[in-house]
Length: 94
Image (cartoon, rainbow, N blue to C red; front, side, top):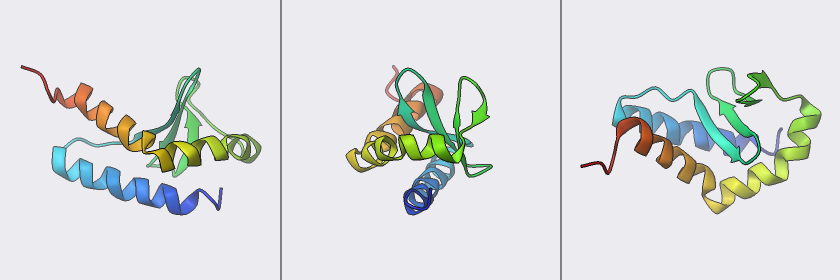
């Protein structure tokens, strides 16, 4: 989790900026969107499985850490955040 911490801090700052810009509160930031949706819970600063509503254990986070880092470094997490706004705010409609 220590390896992820600076990345999560950066994601938190970006989500905070988006909150100010769009006026919509963002609690969850998607990290992995595959069979399960793994999110960063900005309120508790924990990583959880969205469908199950439970936080991941340290061991589970370690198993997913490389995939999460890969998604962050590739820009997928920012893309997920952008797509969320497109759906919630309705950007690009009409």
